Length: 226
Image (tube, rainbow, N blue to C red; front, side):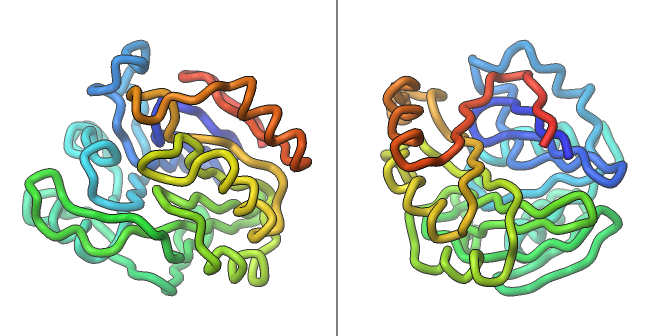
């Protein structure tokens, strides 16, 4: 698998010959102006919830590609009503096998509304498993005991979690989350985009080292082989 970071909580996973784009918020992000949004060309756009800082570029990328949107029922239907009809709705606890692997939606503790203020359903975390590996993207969330269920059901190769605090977990709670999901390989997201989520990188990495977690704070535009 390959992971490419586009800033905030936007990233691309390349696996099984497919490109999976998560929570695209790129063009409004001043830190991500070097990214060629139209060149991403994903096969799937996977959304954890409906907040604007996770869906801002969905329509543009969808219209410029052949991507299918995967998200919760309410989010997929909201985009469908706007004419973005290639969608696969899911909900919490449900699994589906796609041509890149199996997705299971799991609980996240956050809020969700669409950019126009309409109901966005409940936010979700996402576990993806295939022959290349298994990973968990928590989406925006607080620390929750439900994460222990993920560690019981899956053998994760890595996790992707927010570490910016204020709106989501911070680094300290992300360390606890790593223990709950039984995976010490963590890619941090949802940091530094706004003053509210700015973090001290040295402090974050020191906390991770103390907890024996291999924390990566990715650079925008950089690709990691996982």
